[in-house]
Length: 340
Figure (cartoon, rainbow, N blue to C red):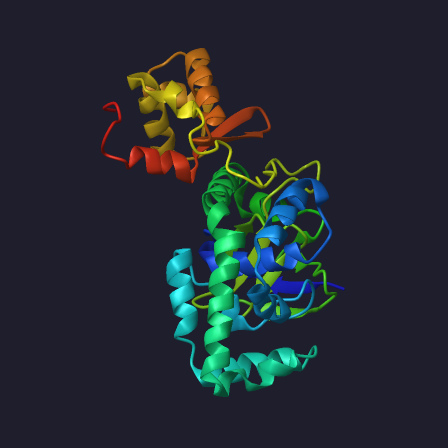
């Protein structure tokens, strides 16, 4: 049983790949935390996160179980910063909260306290504090990692669209669970949910997800267009994108020696700037843009990758480079950097 998304020519023209919405990614993180799957990718992170969570996290985890439905106001697909997303949740109307909880209750039991949530200001305040805490533990420390992995994935998808068209892009999203059978995209939902969605010229927003490793997810009510979340990572031999093991702790401890010291040079800074200006560029293109020999461009890219400033992925015979959030932050930091 599959969920079918029907495309028109207009839909294909308006389909795009976007950044992961923080609340959608937080919902996926809450689910994967309560699951036992993907022990290599998430085992260390799961252990560290569970140790850091306080009892107040239980309210959010009860509303976002490892399987099933979750209230839409907690898993919004709006693309903002994590801080802005948390503020947005606090503006949810009571009528919207009632509507979202009523929809969830049609499919699964709610916690007893949730039935009073919309009418109890103290209970609602506790939920918001729980959400702030869960976000601080599960999402905030890893947000740079998530956006960097998503940027690398988007670079691969852009190249797929350029070289093979939308068919190549849609066919490679997650071959185990997403199948392009023109003009329909068939999605095997983990829940077994089936149905049909006709995009009606709106197109589809494709969102790469680090925490959504288990299966794709769909938000058919998102505006201005429905959202399909697909896992970042190699779940099939034909998928060219790598998966990025989630670190349980920062790569460099406070006071430790950072590999950024190796970047204090004009040429390497120029290479980083070029990759930021041309995300998804190949080593050959990087050499052309910078005027370096291909071997030299490759060597500088290797150092940047070791420092966590770029992601590098392989697609067929090309090696593609994209900046990480840390790399972009370094470029945007005015003091102490060599001129580009």
